[in-house]
Amino acid sequence: MATSARVVPVPIVVSAPSGTGKTTVCRAVVGADPKLEFSISHTTRTARPGERDGVDYHFVDEEAFLALVKDERFVEHAEYNGKLYGTSHEAIDGPIARGCDVLLEIEVQGAAQIRERREDARFVFLVPPSLATLEARLRGRGTDASEVIAKRLAIAGNELSAVSGFDYVVINDHLEDAIAAVREIVAAERSGQRGDAVARHGRETALARGAGALAELPSD
Ligand code: 5GP
View 1 (spheres, rainbow, N blue to C red):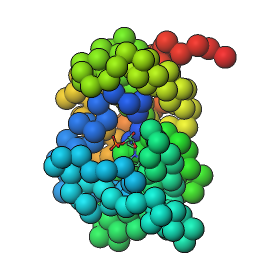
View 2 (tube, rainbow, N blue to C red):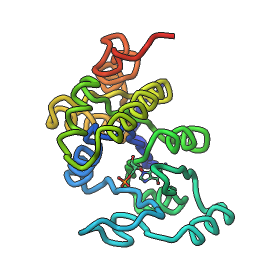
View 3 (tube, helix red, strand yellow):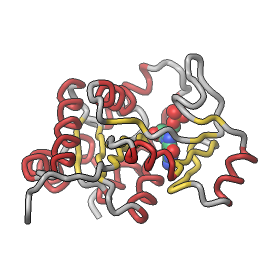
């Protein structure tokens, strides 16, 4: 295969079970890279303190969201925790038209839809080092009752089994290493020279190592 520099920017999808530290990693990766923009999603959940409409999300009510679905404005959309989330075509194609790669931080159902619809997209799965660390992180937030944590852990187990749809797997054990790994993947996809990144972070390599919490998945 030719290894000439790629001219078209790429959408990079990053998914992870809740509590894996995905937001921290994604913010650091985008913040350090002027040619990488966040895809700004739409959601029906209310803004948290400090979040800005049009920057963190486009905050819309359910009626407006469903009208956008009907108009086929979304590449993907999904329900998460009782709220709707969706990526518009514009959220991906806007940054690409500006010559930037675009990072989508979305949950696994949305990632699967993108995989069906955008051949140009690449998929990174962030994995906690173990289910025990994930549980400790969820408890450490101090916001959820035990039964909520148990439910989130069960969801996380399901989400982990989505790994087969991802090109790359990164263990979020040490934050700086995880950030460096995702940056390496972005750089590899940007240059079109993917060999080293695939060898180091490709799904097969990770599975062969029994990576992190993936090692705890029941085999089928
Ligand atoms: P939060 O409400 O904490 O910002 O996000 C909840 C979950 O929804 C996270 O896993 C986040 O990555 C995911 N999410 C954010 N935007 C989108 C989107 O546009 N589509 C999908 N499918 N998930 C999203």
